[in-house]
Image (cartoon, rainbow, N blue to C red; front, side, top):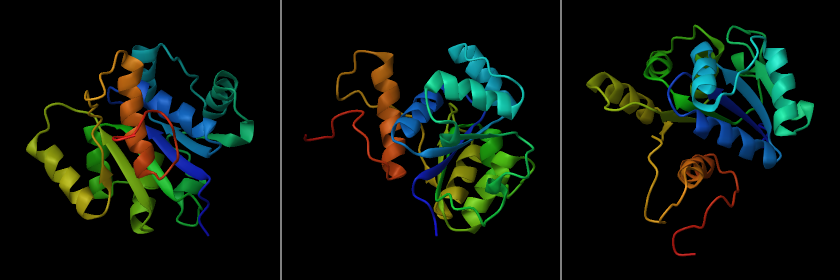
Amino acid sequence: MLDQQQIALAITGASGAPYAKRLLEVLLQQGLTVHLMISTAGRIVLADELDWKLPARASDVQTKLVQELNCHPEQLLVYGEQQWSSPLASGSHRVPTMIVCPCTMGSLSAIACGQSDNLINRAADVMLKEDRKLIVVPREAPFSVIHLENMLKLAKLGVCILPPNPGFYFNPTSLNELVDFVVARILDQAKIEHNLMPRWGD
């Protein structure tokens, strides 16, 4: 039986760290248990874009984030890039949804080709083979034909391809509002309740 109170979040090395951090904050605020994976390049981008410098060891990252985000230690589970003992490496886990935000074109390609050379790619492969929800937030501009073909391949497999394209029809006045717009769309696809912004017509 899948546990709707659990979710997997992978952060890779594409630009878009504010989306990842805000998404993590909201998931924890909503009371979900988050299984977090951060690639080596993802750590670099988090440091460059947010000055969010994380330790090298997964256990130390967990301790730091639990303190910084003020959540219960059992609510945030952090895994290393090669931590094959993680439940996410097996189809027997109970996590129904995985989000890759932001997603590099390299990670996108690896997932599309079933190249399970690290935990992030393996976890995504598990979601595909178990027919569970996988949401990919690809961050690149412009897209090459290779990028588009990989996205089409995944879309045909039922993956939600959600480029972080904020809308402007609600007249945003801050960067935070633009970030929340994208995070709200991700949460909608994950079927997670939120009140980040008013809905059209409300």
